[in-house]
Structure formats: C-alpha cells, structure tokens
Amino acid sequence: MYLIIRCPSCSTFTYVDRFQKWKLCPQCGHAHEVAKAPAYLDVEDYHEAEHIVKQMEKHLHANKKKDFTPEETAELRHHYTEALKKRGRGYPAQ
Image: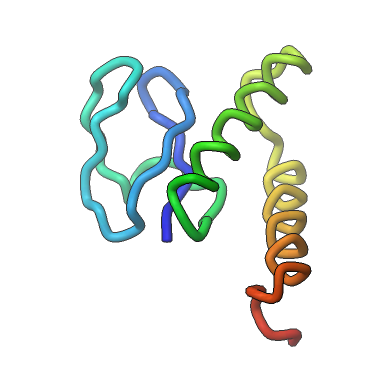
C-alpha cells in the first residue's frame, strides 16, 4: 500500500510506502516526515500511485488551482473506493 502525499515545501504530489518514515521530494529535494505531510489517498501499488499522481497534477493545472478542497479530496477518495469495489478488491459494505 502506498500513500499519495504532497511535499510541504514545493507542493509536488508524490507517493510513499505507507510504513516509510521520511520522504525525499523528487522535485525540490526537501526531506520531510511522512506522518506530517498531507495524505490524499491510500492506493494498492506504485503503478497505480504514479498514474493517480499524474492525474491529480493534471487536474489542478487544467483548473488553475493550487490544491484540492476538502470536498474534492473526499470525492477523490470516494471514487477510488468505488473503483476498487468494481474490481472486487474493495472494502466490505458497512
């Protein structure tokens, strides 16, 4: 499992193994504590994480936004969970 996080220094989206303690930003070189970085999504593998990071950056750029609103982040999580359910790997219904 990988967390999609954002560098607190340059705001670049990246991903990290969920048990990793520190992340060196590939964009600015800033080393930051993973637990303190804003986490947007928890995904299954790094291929998926790479794809989602690109899509998130593309969305913000296309909409001339700097960040997702809390509502957009919740919607992103909801859509990802629904996609997992459709693939048969989702969380059990509550």
